[in-house]
Image 1 (spheres, rainbow, N blue to C red):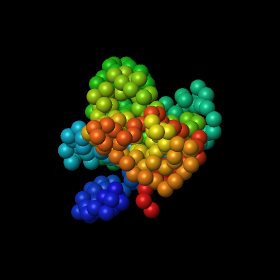
Image 2 (cartoon, rainbow, N blue to C red):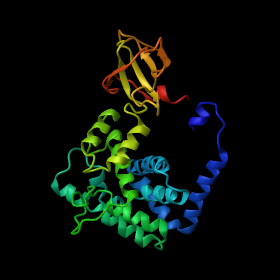
Image 3 (cartoon, rainbow, N blue to C red):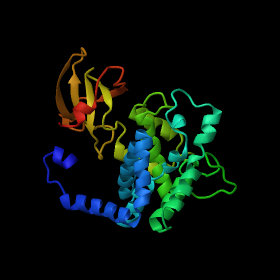
Image 4 (cartoon, one colour):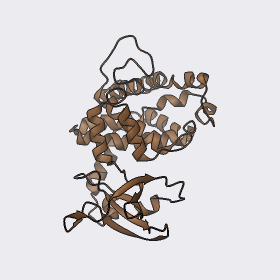
Length: 295
C-alpha cells in the first residue's frame, strides 16, 4: 500500500504469495481460523491488535534474517497469541475502568487457555507448535521467572516470543485499551520499553525495533526549534533522529497546508530545522492520520 501511495510499482506477485500462504494454512485447518474470526466477533480490539502485532513481528523477523518458513510461523503465532481471551467473560474484556485483583487473576489465565485452544484446534505441526510456545510464553519476563503464567524452572524464551513481546507491548500501549485509559505517544512508549530492556524485553531486538520505528515513529506530532508544528510521516533509517515530516502549523499555531521536509537535509552544512519535543496530538485536536495517508 505504501508503494501505491508513492505511485511506485505494486508487487502483486508478492501479495499473491502472501495470500496463497494464508489460504494454504486455512485449507489445513479451517476450524482454527474460524477461532480467529471468533476473536473479531468477540472483541474487535483483540482481532485488530493481533493483526497489527503480526505485521510488526514479520517486519522485525525479516530484519533479523528469518527465512520465509520462519516468518510464516512467526506471523501465524502472532495472529493467535491472544486466542485464549475468547475463553474469558466478555464483560471482563470490555470492562470500563481499572481492573481489580480478581479481574487480573482471570486475565492471567488467557495464555494457558490459548494453549489449550490451539492444541484442540489442529494437529501439532510446526506452525501450531511454534504458536503454542509463543502463546504460553508471551507474558513471561525475559528471565521467565516473572510475569505469567508462573513456572517452576527458569527457561530461555523462544526467539519468536521475544520478537512478539516487543511488538505486542508497543501496539498495545500506542493503541490504548479498556483497562489502559488512553493511548500513549509512540515516543513515550519506546522510552518506557527501554526502561525494561534486559528484564522485560530483549535489548538487542528492542534496539533493532527502535531503528525500524524511529525515535519519532510515524504519526508523531512534534514541535520544531522554529516553534512550528509537524507530523512525522516517514522514518529515516540512516538517522533515526531526523525523519521526514509535514509541517502543518506556523509558530503562532495557525494551521496551513502541509509542507513536506526531510530533516536530514542540510543547508550550508547545517540542518534547517530540528525536533525539540513530542506533542500530544489528542490535546491539540489533531488527527495525524490525515497527514500520513493519502486518500
